[in-house]
Image (cartoon, rainbow, N blue to C red):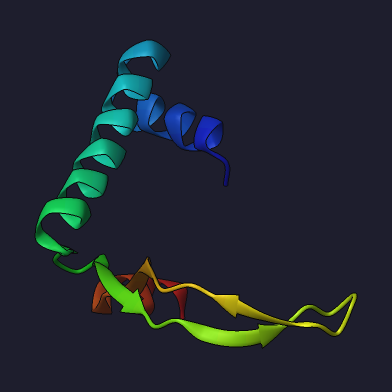
Length: 90
């Protein structure tokens, strides 16, 4: 499902215009982004948890040239599905 499909679904399910649904979906995404940036974790009970974690620096190999290279440390976001989401998929 693409973002456009999601906006169309929200518009239909909530009886909103596509423009209003688009703004609502964007607001949810912005809220999740800000929560992960500021607090490091966003939990949506039953749906899942978005969590920020630090990936350590490491050494790797360029697959084309086989030369070693250094991969710097960075923050990554992971998602763990909640129980209701897991149950609905199975």
